[in-house]
Each structure stands twice: as C-alpha cells, then as structure tokens.
Amino acid sequence: AQAILAQALVISAEGIGIVPRCPTSFLRSMMSKAIVSGIACVLVLQSSSALASGVETCRASSCLSDQSESVMLQLTSPVRSIVPAKLVPRQVANPFAWQTSGGTIADSLWCKAQEPAEGWSLKGCSPGAPLDIKVMTYNLFWWNLFGAQFQNGNNGSAGKLINDSGADVPYDFMVFQECEDGHRVLRDAGLESTHTALGVEHAIVLAYRKDAWSLMGSDILVDVAEDQPGLWGRRTLLLARFQHKASGKTVLLANHHGPLVVGSGGICGGKATAWNILRAIAEHVQADDSIVLMGDFNAEAHSEAVRTLDDYLNRHYTGVSFRGVDH
Image: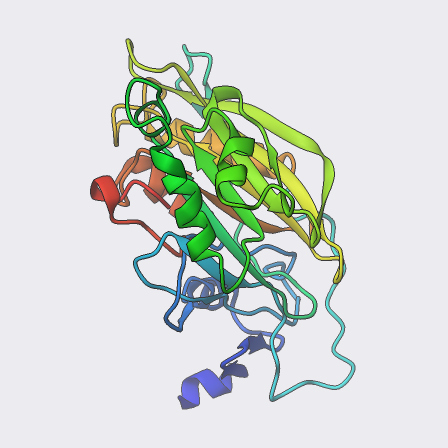
C-alpha cells in the first residue's frame, strides 16, 4: 500500500486517479483490471490520450459481470481524493493514429497485414465526466433460428430475450452476428421506435439508442480476414462513431464476426486478422473516443488472434458458449 501511495495512485469505487510520474507500464497494468460489481459484462476497451507521457489523469474501467452477454461500462475520469493544484491534462494529437513498424505478414494474400509499431497501442482511458453505457453482442444463428424451414423466428424468442435483459436499463448499443435483418430483431424486441439498426452486409449489424446517441458520419465495413477454403468467405469489421447527446462524449463501436475454422484465423492467420482489426480501428478512431470492440470472433481466449488483440486493447469479458469465442 505504501508503495502505491508513493506513486500517488488513488483508488476509489469510481475509478483510479494518477498524478504525474506514475510509470506508464504500471498504468497500463492497472488499466487492465476492472472493478467487478455483479450484473453483466461483455467488453470494454477504454480510449483517450491519457497514456501519453506527462498526462496526469487516467482510470480503470468499471465492469459489472456475470454469465450474461451484456455489459455496463463506465466512461469517466476518476473522482480523485488527491488533486494537485491546477492539474490540466496535456493536449496531444490523436495518439491512436495507425503506426507501423514496416513489418508485414500474409504477404501473398489480399489480407496482407502491417505490424504495429513498437510502443503503439489503443489502450487508454476516456477523459471527462462519468457516463455509463450498456452494450450487448449476440450471434443470432440466423439460418437456424429464423429460417422458414427451421424455427421461423421461434415466435420472436431472440427479441424477447433482448427485451427482457434490457428491461431495467435500456441498451445503448447492440451488435449482432449472423443477422439478415436487424429491423426484424428490433421489432421482435419492441425496440424499433427507440433504436436504429445499421449494416446487414456480411450479416453483421449494429443498433443504437437514438434518443441518447447521434450517429457521426456513416457506418463503415472493412474486410479483415477470410475463412478457410470452402466456408463462408471474407470476414469484416463493422465500425461507426457516435456522440452522446447529453454529455458530448464519443464512442467508436466495432462489431466483428471472425473467420472459420474456429481458432485458426482463417487463411490469413490469427495475427494478421488481429493486426487488420487494429489498423481499421486506428484509421477511424479519434483522440477522445472510447473504443468498444465486441462480437463473435470465432476465436477462443488462447487463440493467436485474441492474444494479439490483448497486447493492444483491454479485454474485459470472454463468453462461455462454444468454448468462449465471444469477446
């Protein structure tokens, strides 16, 4: 405890405050530790310029966790019990802009990937006042659940599950994989008047709560990987940026459905898939965005793809279905 105090690290239920000269390596290790409190968690990837040298404040995410595939996360600066006089965060250019070492892999394939530069990362924390958001990822298994020759929607069972799990606190963002019609899912959930669905190409969709968030620009689809021969084909990352209407805070939301065979990284390999995801995020994120990446990665926590992403993003949740391919 004295060693921590010597670094002027202040821990509270609201977050973590750090004053100057706290080592960056220590900050990064602390940022990976969520404060667990008992409801629901998928994935929280915090972002800001706070990891830059000399920045005075940062905090750990707050993550409520059980076996549900939904999340409460906090985008906030800390409530500090020690505040140096006239503490002003350093203003920097976008620290998340893509940087490469020049190295590449999968050179003979369309999915050739650039290696991130040494020291580059998407890890960070978002500045500003506290903001809780709730998100969910859901692979709908469309052909089976909605196929006319199979369950034909099963009386809207997916929508009912979404409605029930969002009854107490509404979802700010939802991402769906194997989804051929996001609007149908929202209708079944009774959310068509409150949420808007984006995307459908490659059967991945995201939805947002339109009374709380404004879409900034348009959604973007980026090819990042490809299945092993004879399977689905190319795999994508669906991205969109949003601004919170009340606070002005911004979020980059990304939805990924990973390549098959499970754990293989497809023809590109797990590392190339991860690097392509990182580059796509880096080329669209802004300096003060909080990054939320989630989906069915078709890759377990021990896979090369997920372990590579762990080097550059804070993973806060891994599901239990299919040996834990959802993150």
